[in-house]
Image (cartoon, rainbow, N blue to C red; front, top):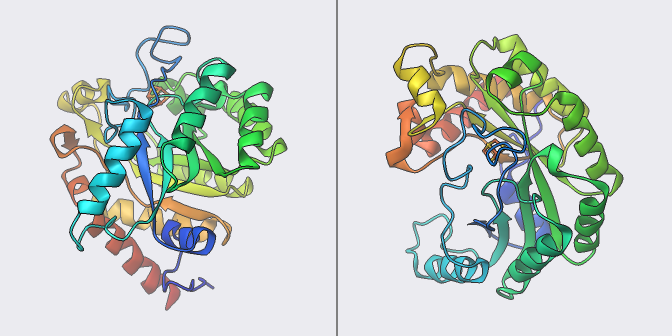
Length: 308
Ligand code: SF4
C-alpha cells in the first residue's frame, strides 16, 4: 500500500517536512564554504569522481563570503515574483554544497558553520554535504553540539554499493569506509541524507535496486535521487563523446525513481527526485533541463502504481 501524505504526495516530500518542522516554506541556500575535496587535491586522488563538475557539485553556489552568499540569496528570493518556487520562503537552510563540507580542521569547520548560522535570523538550520571518509569522531562531536542548537543534517554521497562501479567512477573510498563514516554519524544522532545515482555505467536495474535496498536498510533521514548527468568538462564528457557510455531515458529514470520510493521506509524524506545543473553545463541527458517534468512523471507513475 502506497501511503498518501498530508500534502497529497505519495512520498514524504522535503516541502512537507519543512512545513511540519519549521512551520512553512523553507528554502536551501547553496553555499560554497571554501572547502576542498581529498579526491581532488591529491590526498586520495586528483581526478575527482568522474561525474563531478569543477564546482564540486556546487553549481549554483556563489563566490562571495559565506555571509554574503546567504544574504544575497535571501535578498534575491524576496525580490522574486510569485511564480518563483522560493517566493514565499521565510526561512532558510544554509547548505554547504560544494566539495566536502567537513574536510578541514575542527576550528575552521566550527568558524564556517557559525558564520552561516549567524548570517541572518532567517537561517533555521544547516545542511552539510561531504564524503563518508571525511567524517571522524571529533567532527561528529562538533556536528552533534550544533544539532542541539539548530536543525542540522549531513549529506553523504553513497551513489552505488557496487565496488567495481565505485572504482570505475573513481569515487575513492570503499563501502566499508562509507559504513564507518555513516555509523559514526548515527552514533552521534546526526540525521543523514544519502545520495544515489541511477544510470552509472554498467549497472543493471537490479544493481541499482540493490543500492536502494541497502539505503533503505539504514533507515536514513533522507535520500536524494539523481540521474547520471554528463556535465561539461568532466571526465565523463570525453567517455560519452567517444560512445563509451550512454544515459538513461526519462521514462527509464522515472520507473527507477518510483520503484525506489516504494522500497524506502515511509519516514525517509525524499530531498530530491532528480538532479539539476546549470543549463550550459548539461551535455546529456537532454531531458535533465526540465526538472519539473521528470518530477511530475514520477508522481504520475506513483499514482498509477498505487491504483494497481
Ligand atoms: S567527493 Fe564530491 S566534491 Fe569530491 S570529487 Fe567526488 S563528487 Fe566531487
